[in-house]
Length: 180
Image (cartoon, rainbow, N blue to C red; front, side):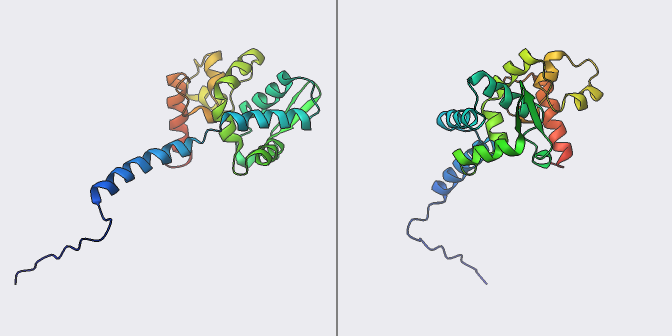
């Protein structure tokens, strides 16, 4: 018995076109996973924190943001317990998340951290604030340098400026924690 496969030519069906779109969509999803915020959103978040906290300068805003995010303020499970204090001002992870959502509905602390990751490192260097995962990395790498400790934050996994050894460890640590 000779089976002949009948191929219908449906309007608009083009497998090569679909393959191209599928490849493009995969690239988009990778960008989306990183989840960076745009410049205006960052500016509005900074202004809202300054206003809400009744601060006179932007330096204090940046110190509060950087200190909080560097100390683990992107970890959802610890939002109630992570608070960073500087010069009688404080910012909690939960409060930051609330302020971010006032500016952009679905934005997160992690998206903010990834967007301003290099600025956070610069501030953390000045204030000598180690990353939230520095002590964990030190168990495997006792020779961890002061700069590497600062870069060792959970949001630095996709930052090309992060030292390679730290970034590799962060990715490995992430995969181990989340079985990926």
